[in-house]
Length: 288
Image (tube, rainbow, N blue to C red):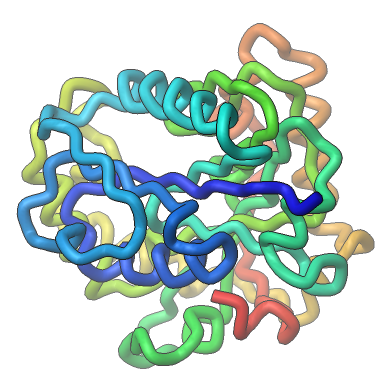
C-alpha cells in the first residue's frame, strides 16, 4: 500500500522562496499533504496558497519554542500520515536520482525511523552566475555548493520526534541514506539581502546579538564573496564512493557516538573544516 507523506514548513513573509518550496513539495506529495505554518505573515505571501495554511499569532522569534511546537505538530500528523518531513522554507530534500525516482519514492522505500540528510549550502558566486530566474531550475543557475554540518538534519520521520532548536538533532539515532538537503539561504545575493533586512528588524527572544540573521549587510556580503573565492572541486560524485562527503558524514557519526550528551552540538564542535566548493553533478540539476 502506498504510504501517505506530509511536508511541513513554517514561514513569515517569504514571497520569493515560499513559491519554490510549494512547487517542489506539492509536486512530490500533492498540495493537500503540504502544511505551511504561517507565523503572522503580513505581505500576502500565504494568502492564495493551494497548500494547507495554519495561521498562528505573530510573536518574537524563539527557536526553542518553534522546535517544540513543530515537534508536536509533526508528530501529531503521524496519526494521519505514515511519514512526515519538516524543512525550513529554504531547505530542499532531494534523494539521489541514481537511487530514487523522486522524494516520494524515497519516502515509500525508506527503512529508517528517522533519516538524516547530507547537507549543502547552495552558494551564489557573483560575477560568475547571473540574476536568478524562478523559471529555470535552481541548480541549473546555482551549480556550486559547500558541505554544511549544520544542514545535516534529521528531517524525515516515521515516528514521533522531538527536535532540538534549529532541527540539527533529535531524540533518535543518526541514520544517513542517499538523501541530500540543498539549503538556499545563500543561493542569491539580492534575495538574501532582502531576507536579512527582514530578519534583522524582527524581534528576537533567543540567540546572541551576533546571530547570522542579524548581521549588517556589509558583513554578510563579505562572507558571500569570501565563500565564492574558495577552491572548487569539479568532479564531486555525490555517490556512495565520494570520499570527501563520506569523511564529513563519518565525522558526524563518530562524534555522536562518542558524545551522546552533547550530540546536538556536532555542527559546532568539530575540527573538520569545509573550505571547498563542490560542483553539483549533472543528475541533480533539474530536480529543484
